[in-house]
Amino acid sequence: MIRSCDDRDLEVIRAIMNDGAQAYKGIIPADRWTDPYMSRMELQREIDDGVVFWGFEEAGTLAGVMGIQEVQDVALIRHSYVRTASQKRGIGAHLLSHLREFAKGPVLVGTWADAVWAIRFYEKHCFRLVGPPEKDRLLKKYWTVPERQIETSVVLADPKWWELGKSW
Image (cartoon, rainbow, N blue to C red; front, top):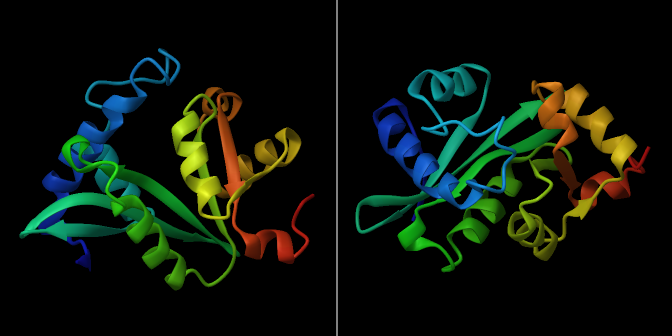
């Protein structure tokens, strides 16, 4: 079952994020990795900035979470994580499909350039990589991330983006 998350879910969301983020350890540049990956303060800041989290619940327990954030004329998929023990069962796909229904405009995703499995996941769901100059421009326009993260990330766009001719 997919449900919206609220303040009562903060610690569970954070636990799922920190568990799921272990897959990125050694993939994310060492200067960008933190342990824990997501602090309570960072998570609260993301929510305060408009990220709305949804969770996939199994037997009364959240197994995966994904956020969506409306920014200007796009929706950003943010913080997509599934518990390690629940991965490879379609939870991320269900969450992504659900969140895309809410998007008012094109959907963009940012992820680490070396996270090949994450890029493939989004490509499997009809997202396409944007070119390097567009990626930099989009990350600066829609995200608040440091320059180092811009250097080591990619952006993928859904079909709505390309239909609108937004391939600068």
